[in-house]
Image 1 (tube, helix red, strand yellow):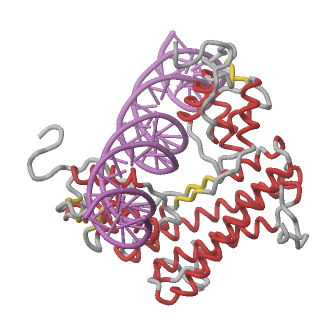
Image 2 (tube, protein in one colour):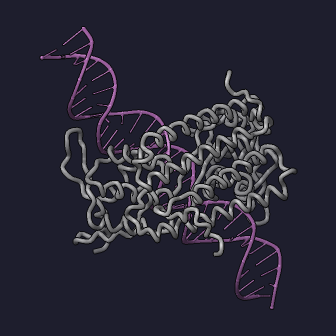
Image 3 (cartoon, each protein chain N blue to C red):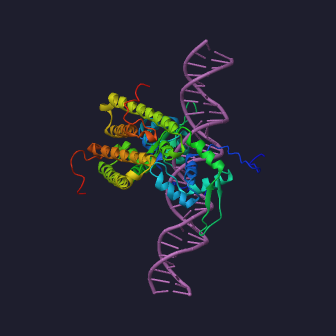
Length: 194
Length: 194
DNA sequence: GGCTAATATGCCACAGTGGACGGTCAAGAG
DNA sequence: CTCTTGACCGTCCACTGTGGCATATTAGCC
């Protein structure tokens, strides 16, 4: 018992990472279990911030040690609700106030395309077509969401949804202007009847 | 013939990850050192596939064990050139032929914005302004690149550059339509005199 | 009661990130 | 000529992030 302080203050040296901080953010609304937090995060920030079960449980355990959250009584299915402590609230506020870093994009299709000279054109075209379809579905989902909930959305949620909408439309535009050499169908007017 | 085969074939069990595969892709042009590979990757695929020195050296060592690359004689500054083997070439081709997965985006600014209710509006507006500026710079860079090298670019490189262009323009558009409640300046025409 | 599926958590190996570190060499300053 | 500086080159480490496997527990259904 030397490393981790026994006196009142656990002295959190590490500045808190974005995933852990997000969990604290969701806990402002009341106690939640790891399971609930995963579901909430997936729903609310999943489109621009990925996290996994493993990560969530690991962070919750670490934050409990650090005194940022406290676990309550274990419920029905080993359900372990966590609630925010004052230290946790403060850590969240500090985190939120930091300069958010640049976005990170990892797009395997672009990687495949960048090495396209080593790949059969037909194959590349098939990948491109599949991805175009997937992006169409995503856009449709966002549009439906906006149509249903648009007006009712808090301005913050509306802004992030708008980002998704614009992003998907830009990607679709890109697909529609891809030259046939890289798997696009050009302006052939096709693409639909599938 | 149990663990790591000593006879000719090292039998690569793992399917190769995208980062390692990209290194093999670059090695088609001739032997390169880890340092060179990092620089090349940063330049060619850095905008949509991030990798770090640590990762590159780790993968090279693993791929050498797996027989996908061979290291040559150590040069001037401990420079260790790697060249592609036939197994490596085959592994790359196999990898390239797989269905590329969906893209991953992690955007801390959207995270900050999603929790915007807990943040001072001024602060959020400052973050937004800074990011808008950064994206403007990125777009300008892409546009300059297209103006200089546009015609000379291979179609694959042209396509990935076009993605970058469209992405940055979409993001900028989003910034320009952000409501003041979430840090936007709306259509106020300001933005300059900061 | 027994089956199955959803709920709920934990563990592990691997992938990915960023920084610190140490050594080598080239070129210019003194 | 030596010394310093900085670019070059590789290594190591701790932490973050991902995905799958292994558990239980419980609700619903027959």
